[in-house]
Amino acid sequence: MATVDAGWLRARATALLERFGLAPVHVVVLDITILAVVARLYDLGARVAHWDEARVVYWTTRYIETGNVEYRPIIHGPFHHHVNRVVFDVLGTSDFSMRLVVAVLGGLLPLAALLFRDRLSDLAVAALAGFLAFNPALLYYSRFMRGDPLVAAFCFAAFAMFVATVDTGRRRWFLGGVAAFALALTVKENAVLYPVCWLGAAALAVDHGLLHDREHDGEWLVLAGGYVRRAAGLVRRHLAVLAVAAVEFLAILVFFYAPRAGTADGPGLWKAIEDPGLAPEILWLSTGGAWADLWGSWIRGSHQDHSYIPFMGDFLQTMGHGALALSLLAILGFVADRYRRGGPTTVVQMGFYWGFFSVLGYPLVTDIKAPWATVNAVVALAIPAAVGFAYLVRWGSEAVAAADHTTLAFAVFALVVVVGQVGAANVGAVYANPQADGNHLVQYAQPAGDIRPVMDVFDEAGAAPGGPDVVFYGE
Image 1 (cartoon, rainbow, N blue to C red):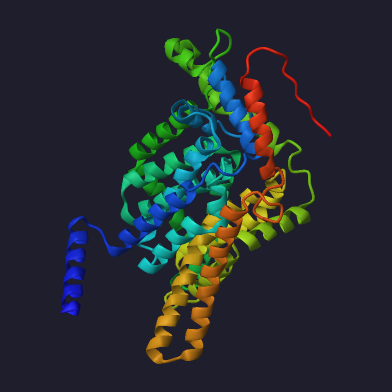
Image 2 (image 1 turned 180 degrees about the horizontal axis):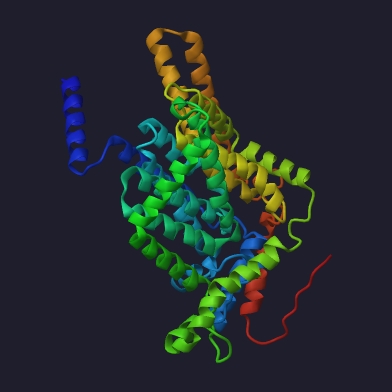
């Protein structure tokens, strides 16, 4: 009777999902996403603010007080200023509220895994959602008001939507991807590196795919010409969509990068709405002017004048503590997919190359040793890692069916190590010791926990009216 009831329940559940056009993997990913949001919101305000968090909050509160703000490359994009202004108006200024947007958006990122259903198995899609939800580096820094986790989330979502555009032909995914990438540009300047990684990864993935295509063996000019003609044809057929995307992209950049002027002096976005004659100046300041500032500060400036090897060592150390299991599974997934029957999967190969380029490149372009930069590599490597995880599960299942105890033991051991490493790192690094010196996910400008009583004294003294204001520094 129990067997009949279980079968009936499964049939009813399947029918209900089909009624709404859903599959079991949708339910799994949704459950993972809910857990991801909860994991990020839990005790979100416990860690004392990092100095980088504090300085951005300072400039945001100055914007709230004065109504004046403009793009300053040294504090990165204006996204946090504008979004957290709304959050602070509603919830007040606190360690919890300043991190809320990053936590919620980071928690919703696993939903992007569903956009790869045409390319990956359901098991790999669920594994991808799990990595995006619970990888220690991603979890730690999505509980941190910093630009990199948002850039990684927006750009990964954009990539997923562009893949869905190719797979489904639906224009909404293309427009969504453009919007997500534009938002990434409003957060931090390193977003410009993502298209470079995508193009390089796509070139290598396509090249490797052609190794299995003997129809055009050696005729690379013919192949290149074919790609160019197809690309030109796509542009001609979708000119209207491209025009809408361009307007959308520009509107997002202008809204965020346009200066705000709460005083009579200086240009501002709302002044341009009242006086259209200011529109050309605002448009320039939001686009060409912002790019000129970025170029002068981050590209031609001296921020990258450092030795590469120590920065690479620090980057790899963080990857080892925050993404070791994911990195090993990414290598497994890349190799297994590379030599699978039928040839490699483009999106899996792209994910690995994109992540590999990020590992090599970020130690070169960052101005400080920053553990948060690793999230840019982690989101990319999560794709081949999910495939590697799925291979382990499949090998384990096949070993059970074939009574192959050696293979089964290896697969089970590997899965236990993966789950154990992720669980131990999350408990220790994310929740138990989020600001300890021995935590390799912690960046060196993170104050110790014992600073909070001192800050409470400052708050109490500052709230008292009258009297002198004194700051004492030293022993």
